[in-house]
Length: 244
Ligand SMILES: C[S@@+](CC[C@H](N)C(=O)[O-])C[C@H]1O[C@@H](n2cnc3c(N)ncnc32)[C@H](O)[C@@H]1O
View (tube, rainbow, N blue to C red):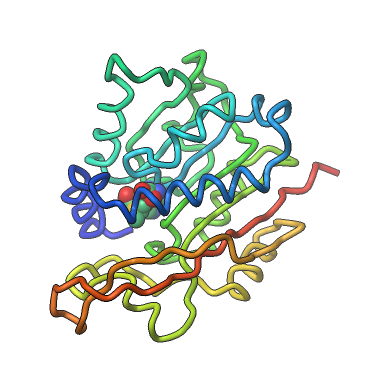
């Protein structure tokens, strides 16, 4: 991520949760992930890494399904918004740890602390890595997938949701004035499948997860959001093989 991209997300952080489409997308991503996980007797032991957590719209609901969530984001404004929610007296969530870091290495000290015990184990590895609406901002997809793979325990899984590049209309997902830091207009199923396999994932699947109706610009660059377009979202699944 470029520093311009980090600046962009810092400036968007305060208003991030006021966009109903953003809230709905995170809700649908959470449902899509839960539907593909084993039952609660298994997942209640899971330590989860949410890469590109934003204000915690996925991390917070996930927290009730799992043992812990380590929520990381390169934009400190996003992490500050999540920490504000966590410190609110009405917030009952105590198993989420939010950290500002541009995560590029599985051994990064920022993710070595257990959110529940507060102790540090090196190297700390996860049962599940999730990310939502992040991949289309990543310049080097293979590098981030390699990092995710490295962050997992043997037998751990990645479940990554983002909108799909379904053709030229996918560009309309972002208004023209928000194109900075958009590396691609959605992700491509076959490309993601290949990349996941290339970094070592097994049982790879990239499939339709849900659809989202989103207001788009009437004319590119007009700034007027009136028309609604239906965007397909995919979930990218991969399993890190057990050590042989
Ligand atoms: C479009 S936002 C999505 C936020 C959140 N997942 C949501 O759906 O509300 C993408 C976020 O990914 C973060 N990001 C991108 N690459 C990252 C990396 N390598 N490490 C940490 N954060 C990253 C950005 O800072 C940004 O806040």
